[in-house]
Length: 417
Image 1: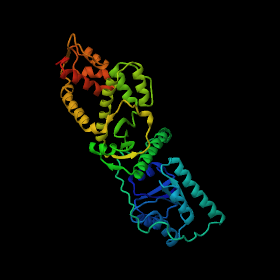
Image 2: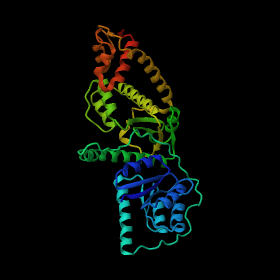
Image 3: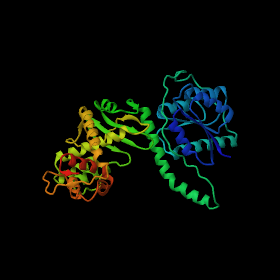
Image 4: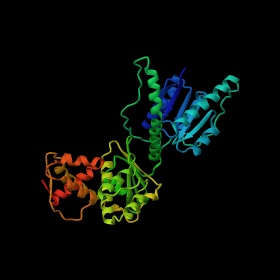
């Protein structure tokens, strides 16, 4: 018989996590988003175990436990899930029987192990006849009415894995698939828990940020501003009114490394920090002006992608990784608005040109100028025979950077169309 689990949490994200963790035939999961509704499920559903958030609307975690133990006189195991961990968990253990806690963030395996541990302990007590009546709790250590109510917007999850049986061989295939995707699912769950926990605990946070929100946040203090949804996270490292670095969760520093390689024409060793990339560039005599220019393009590109992230939220993580700081390469936060506007205007003008694949650009035969390696490559490809679409295929992941450079060379007259 499957284990009946009642999970009570007012976060849609946590609901999705519970569905992902308890998605097999061993569990029968019921979800509730508030303590009041949860109590009705306790009476009618008779769960084997309850997973409980501490801070909830209507009936908070302490009130819920008090009613279950004292009024309903039920000894159902309760696993408290809280970001406050020891501060709250130990007090609950001291006041209520058959209760334990697990801190956020947690690994999926940890909550399953903790839950099975509690169920095993209860079964042993029941079998040996040693199960005790719960002791009446002392006066509550929290107010009967809580003003601390969360509001977590729903995040987008495109699909959930729902295996179907179509042939006799499918169960084996299904097991292989499940085994292969489980590590990835665990990583996704852990990422969502960390972001959700960071968002809930952050003092500075909000939804659907505009550029003005990013500027207001980064004008003072230091930290990492994270803009995220279920699919992607953008991190902006700022300090003392300066934006030092940005990266996305899917590319890390790889994207800026690739851009520098295409722009400068040099090969860089694989690195994990921007400071290491900068050291390599300087060792190859790449000047600061070119580094700064490419850095600004990259940063504005990151900002543009973050602002266009659907169903996004943001918060500030106070941890600051100094390995991404290069003292001589940054953008002043006061200049972000004007710089970003110039980026958008230039991008719009360039797009009018480079999105017309029928255009056949011709480079000047003897073009003189201080061209970057990327610009020289573009000039060599503009032979009057290849159209724009064919030229851009040479640049792979750096198509947008190549579009910008191509458009700039056209606008400045080094390439004619």
